[in-house]
Image (cartoon, rainbow, N blue to C red; front, top):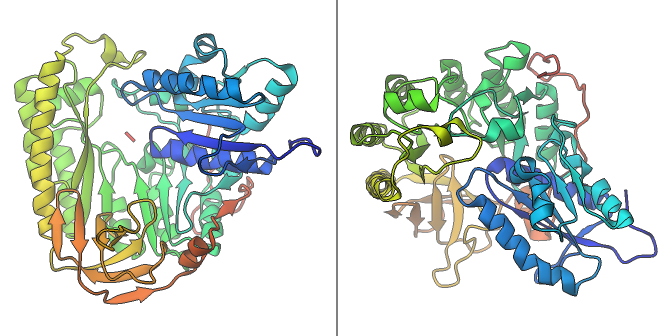
Length: 491
């Protein structure tokens, strides 16, 4: 649905909060709005439509949303015709409560009906009243919708939505629904379309990627998908996030080690090192299994960079439980870790558990954990000094530092590297250099470049163009992987 022909083109801005899934959804929202005739608002200008794509997992998500809505109210009052839309996980959870608390909001839509946004905006304008539409089940798989990608050289590709796990701390399954898998042919067709536009790197995305295939009863589907994706000519890097230790199988390790395009990077959430806490979290694995996976990954890929998630202060966590977490962190030697202080999420079983810990206890343990992990990360990064690394030059991560003249890029193992000697290097180009120094959260390469390869992705970034996909049609044949039946029904 487009704008009226005699009206100026309406502009939009999408603000994203939360996980990679939300980032990917925001690309779809931007694509939908542009297909409906909207244009991205210039930097510094007020938009006619502001879309807040929310998260319900992060701490204080509610306060952040309503704080931002409060800031938008006077902007809207000063710009008649401006519209505000709220989508994502918090919209799925709070529904009509959002309009009750912030009656200046025009549209509320859920995680299952992203594709409804343009029609809801038009309906809100026509009817001059708020539109709240929260579907209870997925209407259209998001990746069949048009997209406006953020990057010319790297792209997210969703392989599934939803999650079948029942972790007691997590609200995602109730907001995103049960897992639904895409057909392999559709996934590979989307990857091919991105590669045709110059993209060099894709990240396969799902709440639990290595459960992929459960809907069509193929336990080896994810490993097969990794291999098939890695065979696409012109695609140089394949990543994925996030797997779950319970379903992680050796065939995935074999696919990673045996497929040159698949990066030796693994994000494997731990959450806790205590078997008792893992049981109450309902994670489905124990410390021994987790460390066994890490050992097998390193045996197959000694250069693999392994990262993780850890929750501190889960209800009932004792000092002995926490010490077990510290011990696993010492043994696993993660390249980095996302560490979180447990806080209640209404609607989750953990919120009602006995043994909720005082904030000061959680904070003290959190500081001990982050100090240990920083020490390990720095040691692991110092071990990289002197190594030659291949970098995909990046935008948006300090792509050019005026003071040092350094650019930034990602190594194949996912580490962030600030490098010198980047004259003429564009985001999306590929360079080789030698690591000269290390810090806990990045590497430095201050020597001359060993090589610089200009790429089509770099050309596209320089020209200011971004990959766009009109949506991938359903029912496409599989490419190298048996086509599953339609699915029914990161943590």
